[in-house]
Amino acid sequence: DIQMTQSPSSISVSLGDRFTITCRASQDIGNYLSWYQQKPEKSPKLMIYRATNLEDGVPSRFSGSRSGSDYSLTINSLESEDTGIYFCLQHKQYPLTFGSGTKLEIK
Amino acid sequence: EVQLVESGGGLVQPGRSLKLSCLASGFTFSNYGMNWIRQAPGKGLEWVASISSSSSYIYYADTVKGRFTISRDNAKNTLYLQMTSLRSEDTALYYCALITTKGFAYWGQGTLVTVSS
Image (cartoon, rainbow over all chains, first blue to last red; front, side, top):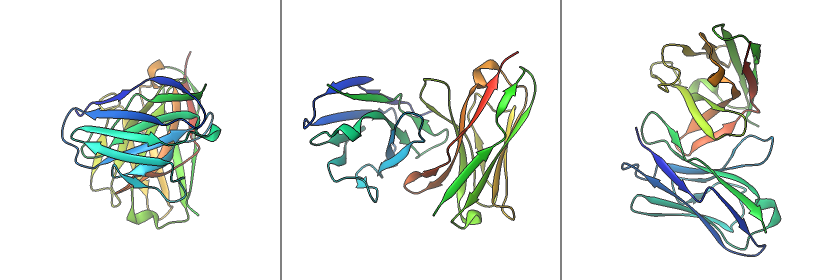
């Protein structure tokens, strides 16, 4: 099974700051990596797909990147509405696996 | 507008069975693979099962293999999850989700399953 190691598990960031979350894949997943935002009591929402592509309607301050087996979600100029939990997902191979999540709070 | 509406959750005793449904609308259901994903209270996301558009390919997480069965009725635009031999660790919010090449593009609102005596 492919393990997705996500870090950090939680972080507090100031408004306007830049923030990066990383998922490391234990095996090659190509670009079959997506990022999700989950607000309290809400379903997850797709933010980034195929590692670097911004989903329609997602603010341009969000971006995705890849360096080898490391996949990153960056939020430039953090806004209050960006709080929540972020998960990565690999859908290269079954079983599909999620990262453990990153809880983002405003400092 | 894509809509996925889960139902069938509830309180069930350990060892008993429960069947979840997910009614889809706003897209051609028969063209897409579908999935069940769960989230235990206060925990992360766990993929549970996948079924291809024509039911030809089905996959399960090891944690539910042999106990859960995913199925679909394309004529009724409905996805199912038959859960048997339920355990306390199956307690979770169960989401259905549409999978595309982008990943899980659309999610339902979830249905809560609580396994407790």
